[in-house]
Length: 118
Image (cartoon, rainbow, N blue to C red; front, top):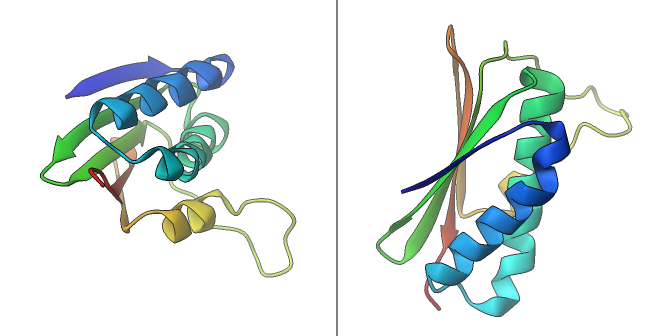
């Protein structure tokens, strides 16, 4: 399992970290861009709507890649209809095989699954 702690200025490193992790896990090249977009959306949410610090973990699970993004913030409901912006989780949900959100006293955690090996 690979782990990276990050803050808002570190988002380029988050994208590089997950891109390298996807390649290392055998994700097909044509799937990597969508994978990076999904993780970037969730990581951006973590450090803009959660707290200033986030953590991303990535690991293979059979033919899938699992990514977990955690922050210590308090969950806030998503955007209202007609809002501009605030669609990061929606975008990630559309790109992932599965996305789950856990919220509690110790922050928010988004777990996403993606097809790994081609």
